[in-house]
Length: 110
Image 1 (tube, rainbow, N blue to C red):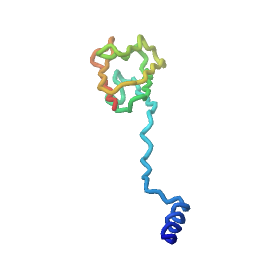
Image 2 (image 1 turned 90 degrees about the vertical axis):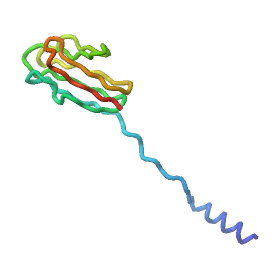
Image 3 (image 1 turned 180 degrees about the horizontal axis):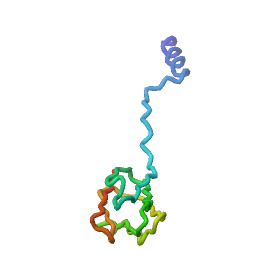
């Protein structure tokens, strides 16, 4: 019986562990969407909760980035202006330019 106790103590002393290490969860990102050629590029993007998207107006005319559900609205963006929004909840967010309604985009947040 003494031998068995010694073996258990010996194995325990080497730090043997049966626990598996899970990979770290993916981290939120910052992503850019260009506004150019009267289009959002890319028009559809998928991000994680907590991620930030920055829209950059590369056109020479004013545009907006306006959520259809009114979650966010950039107001008027002149050439070179940017607008950033951080997505804190899961869902699909469709948006468009108020001044050019045919310009549409979508953000899918997981």
